[in-house]
Figure 1: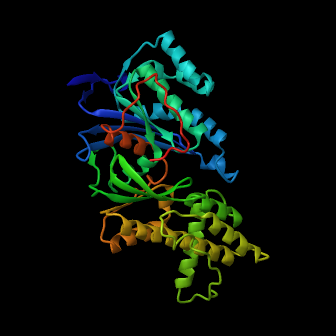
Figure 2: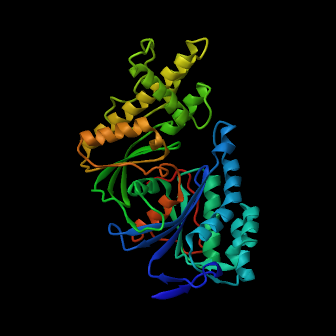
Figure 3: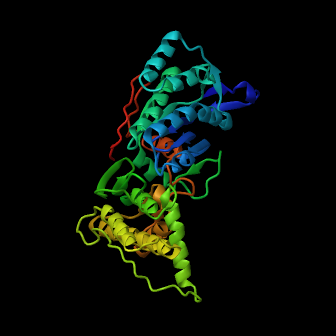
Length: 418
C-alpha cells in the first residue's frame, strides 16, 4: 500500500492509496463539468464516493440567442476548465506531489492546443497543474456524441493533463454516461462510499435529451442495442422549437412544462370555467410497428394551429403546451410498450435532460409500475450533462473499455452511437 503525503494545505494528514481516482471531464454541449471520483472493487460490487463534482451551466449566455451556439460554447468551456479543475482539487482533499515539467513536455502540450485553443494552453501553463501532480490514476472524457467544437475542448484538455501527469486518458460515450448515472442512489452524500442500485439485466433504457431520443436494450453495462430512435428532431429539440413559436424563453422545455401544469391544474379545479379543449395534435408514428419516433410533424402541427389564431393568448399558450406535452409523452409510452413486448427486459432505465420533465418522468414511472419492473430514473441534478456520469462510466466499464495512453490523442465524434 502506497502512502501519499497530502499537499501543504492538508499537512499532517495521510492519504492511503488503495483505490482508483478518476477525473471525469464533460464538455459535450453547454455544461462544463469536472468530477473527481474514488472507486474500489469492480462492478456490480463497485463502491464509489464523489470527492468533488462541479457543473457550470452556460444557459444564461445562450438563452438570449434562443439556443446553443457551438463556437460560443467552445470558448466558454476553454475559459472554465482550468479554474473548475483547481476548485475540484481543492474541494477533494486529494494529495499531490511536486513535479518539474520539462520544456519537451510543455511543447507537446502546446502542439495539442496549437490548432485549437492557444488561450487554454496559456491558462494551463500559468496554473498549478504543471507544478503539482494530484493523486489521480486516470482521466475519462466525453468524446461524443455532442457538439464537436465543444467536445474538442474537453478532449484536448484531457490529453494535455494526461501528458503532463503521465496517466491514461479514455474517451467515453456520452449516452452510456446517461445510462449508468441512473443507477446512482437517490440519496447520495458527498465523501461517503455508496453502492450503485442493483439493476436486473437485460433492461430497456429510454434516453431523452436536447440532441437525442433513443430506446436502448441494455443487455448489460457495456453492451447495448439501439431499438429505436427519432428520425428527425429529438424530444428536447422539439420542446425548444415549440417554445420559440409560443414566444417562450430558452430553454423551452421547462417553460412548456410549467404552462402545461397550469393547464392541468386549472382543468382539475372544481371552480374551473375553462373552455372545452379544442386543440388536438397527432401522436406521430404511434401505430407504426417499429420503435422509431418522429417529432418534426408534431412541431409543424403546432405551427398550423397557431396560424389559426390572430393572437396567442395565455389560455391558448397553456392549451397548446399541455396538448404538445401530452402528445410527446403518449408517443414515448407507446413506443416503450412495444419495446417491452418485443424484448425480454426486467427493468426500465431513464436518462437525459428531458427526464427533468415531471410529466414524462411520472408517465415512465407509472408504466414501470404497471409492468411490475423496477424504474431507474436519474437522481435530482443528474439528468443533465455532468462529469460524474463520465467518470462513473469509466469506473464501471474499466475491463470492457480500453483506455488510451497519454500523448495518443482521442478524437471528437459528434454523431457517436452506443
